[in-house]
Image (cartoon, rainbow, N blue to C red; front, side, top):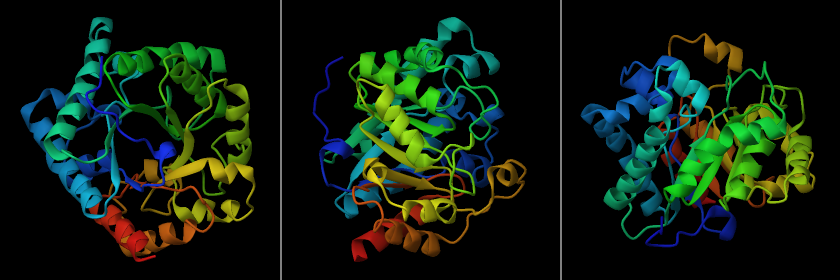
Length: 314
């Protein structure tokens, strides 16, 4: 599919980019949507679900516009890989169409809310297993084979890039990066970290980034951290090293809770938006190439707006 306009990607420019925030937690706790296995994409097949998505995304895109920032518009596909689609009861014949519909809807949102702006349609890939617990780890080769399906649908339908969010281990990240490279798609790898700043496997972030880079002919365009609070990893960034230059994005949790604690929460912990924004501002001192800013669990437009204000004030 031919794209009508070339959009500048985060690794190609110093422009700041905004993402959305904790979409699933917002829909679950603020809007009361039932989301089996934390998957919202089935609601995109309903009028109400599409309206909720538009209502949610519009203020983020307006914030990006007001701050002269680009916007990374994610497809709602974090839970749209084959194993999760099977678990949610979808036939194999529906898998391609579900992912294709998500890309088409993101492109519709870009046309409706992002006219004249640098809005990047980003194909989102989630972990094959649990986003917090790497109880089963594939080989890099198996991960490439598994995730090639979703990457292929994204490539065939004109996304600008792909991002793997909430990665818990390096072999899966390597497989996704390789699959994206085979299809010529720029790829961002976003690792999740525990309260000690390490991956759930116990691996250090610096080692994980170095291992993925060394294992891929087409290296990821950049790396991110998501689904962790700044308190959990700011200390490791201060250790410095070449690997910090590969990190360009942050999508932090509002809560300081561990992943295990978040899994058990019955009420949303939305933290302190102003405090979180100040922490983002301070982290820019340790990450010289940081230019992608958004949120994860517990965050919403309030947090991202405060983050943009804090960065603009610097």
